[in-house]
Structures are given as structure tokens and as C-alpha cells.
Length: 377
Image (cartoon, rainbow, N blue to C red; front, side, top):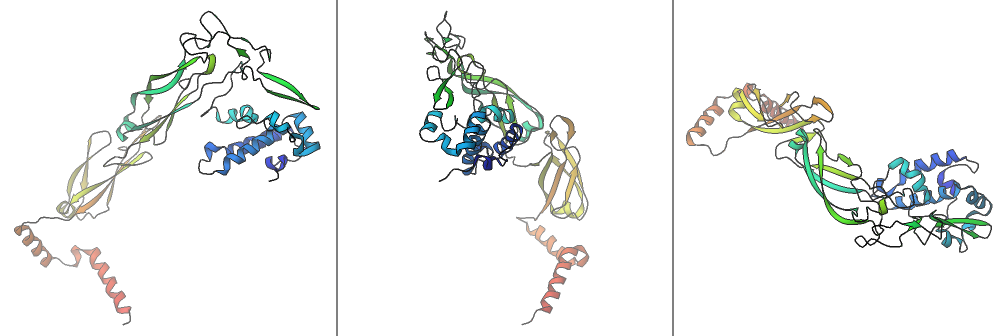
């Protein structure tokens, strides 16, 4: 299938300046990044297409060649030697621009000297609604890679240090002449690190890091919601050969509660109400999320679905002294397992009741009768 025009992919004119190219790439990279489109299998292809286009057009030499020869400038064997117009994973544009927009969640940036920053880690934690209300301190165990203590993360044997790569002279990249193009690519001798280890550490075998489970303390603030993300800077995987460590991201989920339902800062609960209390009125006590009791006055004749609002009895609000409200909805309970005496009392009530004691049912059946009279046989 023929490749699309790079200018068309980025949505810019052929004479677009560097600023326009960069702005167009930012918007499209954010739109199509796979992490933001987990349910769209075409997003990754579009993201790579955008990255490839930007990688070529941002480079003056590559852009001049593309403007003159089109896609043929990078074909005929040249693409294989270049890595497909500069693609390295998601493309060079990913390292230059995408890190500025999204940081490094889920990956590792290159740090100074060519070594890669440690990867970010994700930890899923489940908490109760009471813990979300009060906040808590929690300890978690995270399997991760940590810097090797024997070599202080350098990967080199104690008493030695990595030396500059002789192939690239410590730059991490080499230039190769291909016709009238000069192509720069990662040094194969040091894998872009710019340094090589002549005497590897006997513990980590030159990697500079080891697999280990570490225990971390996490502060969960009051008022967190389902899906809240907590970032622990530098607690991700250790970087290769003393490169900076990644970050640890803790994703919180709130467990389902048997009584309370949460909606933002407000809490809802449904409470059964005895028929006699609903008819005659009275008081009931209901639980609150903070572990106390709240008293509600029931008016005579209260019906199922009646809702009572208890101000400032709901959830904590993150980074705020405010609180949401507690909404209590009552459901009138029909008596069961009646004794003979109870049945007799209810039968006497049924005989004595009139339309004024059950206005809703009386009005409903009046409307039903009017409807039936309008129906034809």
C-alpha cells in the first residue's frame, strides 16, 4: 500500500516552519498515543505514522531529500540501514517531544551518557470507603530492579570504572555515509551508552541493577476517589548503570460497600422503615461513614422513596476541610410472619380505612377506571 504524504499526515503545508511542525506533532501524538486509546487497535499505527513523518520533516537534510525524491529517498535498501527513516520504537520524535507532554510513564528516557532511565512501575491498591474517608498510611511490597550495591550501579567491578567506547568516542552514536546522505545511528558497540565495561561486576554482571522486592510507605490522603493515581518519584525501576530511576504509580480502587454508595463527595444509603413508624412517625438512627450514628425524624405518613439529607455527613473532600452530604432513602417494609392477633388488627384496620388514608392508591385506581371506561370491547 502506498505511503501517505508526510505533510498530509501532519496536516501542514509544505512550507511550514519548525514551530508549525512541532505544534502539529504535539497535538497528533497526544491524540493517537496507544496509552490513551487502549480500545483502538489503529491508534498505534497512526501514532507511528505521525512520528515517522515528524522525524523526517524536522531534520533539514531528510526534509530536503523528501521534498526532492519523496518516499523513494528512504527506500532501495536505505531504510533498513537507517531504521525506517529514523524509527526507534515509537520514533525519535517520541524522545524529543513526547516526553515533554507525558513525562515517562510506562517507559524509560535516555539520560545523560546514553544509559536509559529506569522504567516506571504500576501498583494497584484496593481500599475501603472508610479508608478513603479517613486517609491512611500503608506499606506495600513492590518487586523491582534496584541499583547494585556492590558496584554502586555502575556495572563495573569494584575499583574500576566504565571507559569511553572506542567506536563512537563516547558519543553513543556513529555517522555513516550513504551516497549523498550522512546517517547517524546508535553505536552497536556500546548500544548508545557511550561507555563500555571492561571488567563487569561479579554480582550484577555489568547490568548495574538487581531484581529485588522493596517495601515502601504510602500516604493515602483523605478524600481520594476511585481511580486516583499517586506518584512516588524515583521508586520505579533503577536505571541502567547509575541512570536515574523511574517512578512508581499507585492506582487506587474503592471497594464496594454493603450499605453506602458513593457519588463524588456525597454518600447514599437505603434504609428499611417499619410500616408502623412510617404511618405514625418517629425517629430512626442510621450509620455514617465516619463510624457514628445520625438520628432522623420520620414524619407520619412517610412513603417509600422519601429521601432525607444530612448535611456534611458525606465523604471528605481531597485537600479541603469541606465534606459532602449523606442522603438516606427509606423503604417502607411490609410486615411478614404475622400472628393471629396481628392479622386481626390489620383486618379491622382494612375494614375501617377510607380513601383519605391511602390517597395515592385511591387516585391511581380512579385513573385506571377512567382508562377502562374509554376502552372498547
